[in-house]
Amino acid sequence: MNKENQAKIIELVKQAKPLILQEMTHEKVTEKGAADYVTNVDVAVQNYLKEALEKEFPEIRLIAEEKENLGLNSRKSYWILDPIDGTTNLIRDYHLSAVSLGLYENGEITFGVVYNPFTEELFYGAKGEGAYLNGTPIHVSNQPEFKDAVVSFGSSPYEKNRAKELFPVFYNIFMNCADFRRTGSAALDLCYVACGRQHAYLEQNLKPWDYSGATVILREAGGVITDWENKEPPYLENSDILACVPQFREILQHLIKNRSDPRPGISNALQMQKNNLQISKDTNADFSIFHKIS
Image: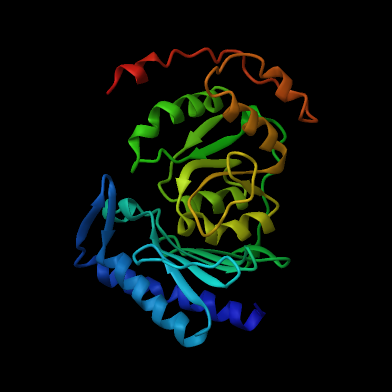
């Protein structure tokens, strides 16, 4: 996508702000499932961008959260849209929500925009052209030691049956990093890794619109993103996501794989880093409580 079209897309996304604020004055909330909501704001933003994108790029079909997405073909091009990533935050007036839009072409995301209308932060990136926050180039952190890392995670609130598997992973990581963050917006978490505010983000079973738009932003900022098996995300399907600065990827993969026994043996993973990091040996947690809850 050329610079002129990139600028058009960025402007279209920014123009969603007055619509969001207007729709919030008479907010209507519908529950789609457990802890999963849609509001009139989501619908209005999706309808606006669908119409605008079809007008400018009629040959590119839209994949979006609040619509059926059938008959997808990995050889075709698509816009992948989350009209409001962080709907629960929006409902609670917790200003960590974003419009996330990615362009899928030839099996990858080549252009992405993530816009938080409440903070006026607009992240964007294009393949081979860098990543930016409000026009200023961004890059991931060069923090050398994992013990000083800030890691963000998603708790999969729509699938609480995953907690028995997930929380031992989070404990394992938490005991070896500086601290955790939980924003409630996958797109913003990925962008926060991209601009150096956080060093990693992980979550299971994210939908394409949750992660696609921010993927190219993170990669162009020097970050890495894979599924939990170190494979390329599928983009048109749900995926577990691990995104981080490159120097922490192997350590995080090791900590995820050793979720069932979060005890030593981790020292081997430290050989992977050039800085002789020391992961804490105090990771002997008792997770029997998860098995007592039904």
